[in-house]
Length: 195
Image (cartoon, rainbow, N blue to C red):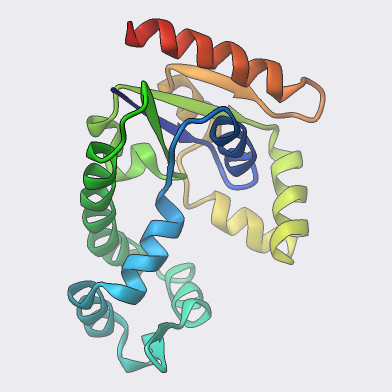
Protein backbone atom coordinates (compact mmCIF):
# COMPACT_ATOMS: atom_id res chain seq x y z
CA UNK A 1 0.00 0.00 0.00
CA UNK A 2 1.27 3.46 -0.91
CA UNK A 3 1.22 6.25 1.65
CA UNK A 4 0.28 9.55 0.03
CA UNK A 5 0.35 13.00 1.61
CA UNK A 6 -1.86 15.92 0.62
CA UNK A 7 -0.72 19.38 1.58
CA UNK A 8 -1.23 23.01 0.68
CA UNK A 9 -1.36 26.37 2.34
CA UNK A 10 -4.24 27.62 4.46
CA UNK A 11 -7.35 28.09 2.29
CA UNK A 12 -5.99 26.03 -0.63
CA UNK A 13 -8.86 23.53 -0.47
CA UNK A 14 -7.08 20.43 0.87
CA UNK A 15 -10.24 19.24 2.63
CA UNK A 16 -12.31 19.59 -0.56
CA UNK A 17 -9.78 17.51 -2.49
CA UNK A 18 -9.52 14.81 0.19
CA UNK A 19 -13.32 14.51 0.28
CA UNK A 20 -13.20 13.70 -3.45
CA UNK A 21 -10.64 10.94 -2.80
CA UNK A 22 -12.87 9.60 0.00
CA UNK A 23 -15.82 9.51 -2.42
CA UNK A 24 -13.86 7.13 -4.66
CA UNK A 25 -13.06 4.88 -1.69
CA UNK A 26 -9.62 6.07 -0.58
CA UNK A 27 -9.18 6.30 3.22
CA UNK A 28 -8.00 9.70 4.48
CA UNK A 29 -6.24 10.58 7.73
CA UNK A 30 -6.79 14.22 8.66
CA UNK A 31 -3.78 15.33 10.71
CA UNK A 32 -5.51 18.48 12.05
CA UNK A 33 -8.52 16.53 13.36
CA UNK A 34 -6.26 13.82 14.77
CA UNK A 35 -4.07 16.41 16.52
CA UNK A 36 -7.17 18.00 18.10
CA UNK A 37 -8.37 14.60 19.33
CA UNK A 38 -4.93 13.76 20.71
CA UNK A 39 -4.65 17.14 22.48
CA UNK A 40 -8.00 16.43 24.16
CA UNK A 41 -7.57 12.72 24.85
CA UNK A 42 -3.89 11.80 25.23
CA UNK A 43 -2.94 12.29 28.89
CA UNK A 44 0.80 12.62 28.18
CA UNK A 45 0.12 15.31 25.58
CA UNK A 46 -2.34 17.13 27.89
CA UNK A 47 0.27 17.25 30.67
CA UNK A 48 2.96 18.59 28.30
CA UNK A 49 0.58 21.28 26.96
CA UNK A 50 -0.39 22.35 30.49
CA UNK A 51 3.32 22.53 31.41
CA UNK A 52 3.92 24.77 28.39
CA UNK A 53 0.84 27.05 28.59
CA UNK A 54 -0.42 26.66 32.17
CA UNK A 55 -3.77 25.44 33.49
CA UNK A 56 -5.65 27.96 31.26
CA UNK A 57 -4.75 25.72 28.30
CA UNK A 58 -7.84 23.65 29.19
CA UNK A 59 -11.39 24.59 30.19
CA UNK A 60 -13.27 21.73 31.88
CA UNK A 61 -10.88 19.23 30.31
CA UNK A 62 -11.29 20.65 26.77
CA UNK A 63 -8.38 22.33 24.96
CA UNK A 64 -8.79 26.13 25.05
CA UNK A 65 -7.89 26.63 21.38
CA UNK A 66 -8.57 30.38 21.33
CA UNK A 67 -6.25 30.96 24.31
CA UNK A 68 -3.45 28.86 22.79
CA UNK A 69 -3.89 30.37 19.29
CA UNK A 70 -3.50 33.89 20.69
CA UNK A 71 -0.24 32.88 22.35
CA UNK A 72 1.35 30.88 19.52
CA UNK A 73 0.53 33.35 16.76
CA UNK A 74 2.23 36.09 18.80
CA UNK A 75 5.19 34.00 20.00
CA UNK A 76 7.08 31.90 17.39
CA UNK A 77 9.01 30.04 20.12
CA UNK A 78 5.78 28.90 21.81
CA UNK A 79 4.46 27.73 18.42
CA UNK A 80 7.67 25.80 17.84
CA UNK A 81 7.43 24.25 21.32
CA UNK A 82 3.79 23.26 20.75
CA UNK A 83 4.64 21.72 17.38
CA UNK A 84 7.53 19.81 18.99
CA UNK A 85 5.00 18.23 21.36
CA UNK A 86 2.10 17.61 18.96
CA UNK A 87 3.84 16.62 15.68
CA UNK A 88 5.58 13.46 17.00
CA UNK A 89 2.33 12.25 18.59
CA UNK A 90 0.41 12.88 15.35
CA UNK A 91 3.11 11.21 13.23
CA UNK A 92 2.95 8.13 15.44
CA UNK A 93 -0.87 8.09 15.35
CA UNK A 94 -0.82 8.39 11.53
CA UNK A 95 1.65 5.49 11.25
CA UNK A 96 -0.62 3.24 13.31
CA UNK A 97 -3.63 4.31 11.22
CA UNK A 98 -1.78 3.70 7.91
CA UNK A 99 -0.92 0.13 8.96
CA UNK A 100 -4.62 -0.56 9.60
CA UNK A 101 -5.68 0.35 6.03
CA UNK A 102 -6.07 -2.24 3.28
CA UNK A 103 -6.65 -0.14 0.16
CA UNK A 104 -4.17 0.32 -2.73
CA UNK A 105 -3.18 3.62 -1.15
CA UNK A 106 -4.17 5.83 1.78
CA UNK A 107 -3.91 9.59 2.18
CA UNK A 108 -2.66 11.75 5.02
CA UNK A 109 -3.97 15.31 4.81
CA UNK A 110 -1.78 17.83 6.63
CA UNK A 111 -0.95 21.51 6.15
CA UNK A 112 2.54 21.04 7.61
CA UNK A 113 3.83 17.87 5.90
CA UNK A 114 7.24 19.36 5.07
CA UNK A 115 7.44 21.57 8.17
CA UNK A 116 6.88 18.54 10.45
CA UNK A 117 9.11 16.11 8.54
CA UNK A 118 6.11 13.87 7.77
CA UNK A 119 7.22 13.48 4.13
CA UNK A 120 9.86 11.01 5.41
CA UNK A 121 7.00 8.59 6.19
CA UNK A 122 5.21 9.02 2.84
CA UNK A 123 5.78 7.60 -0.64
CA UNK A 124 4.43 10.64 -2.54
CA UNK A 125 3.03 14.07 -1.72
CA UNK A 126 0.20 15.85 -3.57
CA UNK A 127 0.16 19.64 -3.41
CA UNK A 128 -3.12 21.55 -3.63
CA UNK A 129 -2.33 24.88 -5.25
CA UNK A 130 -4.51 28.00 -5.07
CA UNK A 131 -3.53 31.63 -5.75
CA UNK A 132 -2.77 33.64 -2.62
CA UNK A 133 -5.67 36.11 -2.96
CA UNK A 134 -8.18 33.28 -3.33
CA UNK A 135 -6.70 31.49 -0.28
CA UNK A 136 -7.01 34.71 1.77
CA UNK A 137 -10.66 35.22 0.76
CA UNK A 138 -11.60 31.58 1.44
CA UNK A 139 -9.98 31.63 4.87
CA UNK A 140 -11.53 34.98 5.84
CA UNK A 141 -14.95 33.64 4.82
CA UNK A 142 -14.50 30.19 6.41
CA UNK A 143 -12.95 31.27 9.73
CA UNK A 144 -14.36 34.78 10.09
CA UNK A 145 -10.86 36.24 10.27
CA UNK A 146 -9.49 39.59 9.14
CA UNK A 147 -7.14 39.76 6.15
CA UNK A 148 -4.28 40.58 8.57
CA UNK A 149 -5.03 37.51 10.72
CA UNK A 150 -5.01 35.26 7.65
CA UNK A 151 -1.72 36.76 6.43
CA UNK A 152 -0.19 36.22 9.89
CA UNK A 153 -1.11 32.52 9.67
CA UNK A 154 0.17 32.24 6.11
CA UNK A 155 3.50 33.69 7.23
CA UNK A 156 3.91 30.75 9.63
CA UNK A 157 3.88 28.27 6.71
CA UNK A 158 6.49 27.52 4.06
CA UNK A 159 6.13 29.77 1.00
CA UNK A 160 3.48 28.21 -1.26
CA UNK A 161 5.72 28.15 -4.37
CA UNK A 162 8.47 26.34 -2.47
CA UNK A 163 5.93 23.89 -1.00
CA UNK A 164 4.53 23.07 -4.46
CA UNK A 165 8.04 22.44 -5.84
CA UNK A 166 8.58 19.88 -3.06
CA UNK A 167 5.41 17.96 -4.05
CA UNK A 168 5.33 15.02 -6.48
CA UNK A 169 1.91 15.93 -7.93
CA UNK A 170 -0.11 19.16 -8.06
CA UNK A 171 -3.86 19.68 -8.13
CA UNK A 172 -4.85 23.25 -9.08
CA UNK A 173 -7.84 24.50 -7.10
CA UNK A 174 -8.22 28.03 -8.48
CA UNK A 175 -11.99 28.13 -9.21
CA UNK A 176 -11.05 28.12 -12.93
CA UNK A 177 -10.05 24.49 -13.53
CA UNK A 178 -12.33 21.58 -12.63
CA UNK A 179 -10.89 19.57 -9.73
CA UNK A 180 -12.86 16.30 -10.17
CA UNK A 181 -11.11 15.38 -13.46
CA UNK A 182 -7.74 16.22 -11.87
CA UNK A 183 -8.48 13.95 -8.89
CA UNK A 184 -9.69 11.08 -11.10
CA UNK A 185 -6.62 11.36 -13.35
CA UNK A 186 -4.29 11.41 -10.34
CA UNK A 187 -6.14 8.45 -8.80
CA UNK A 188 -5.42 6.40 -11.95
CA UNK A 189 -1.79 7.52 -11.94
CA UNK A 190 -1.34 6.48 -8.28
CA UNK A 191 -3.04 3.11 -8.93
CA UNK A 192 -0.55 2.51 -11.77
CA UNK A 193 2.29 3.21 -9.31
CA UNK A 194 0.89 0.62 -6.89
CA UNK A 195 0.99 -2.19 -9.47
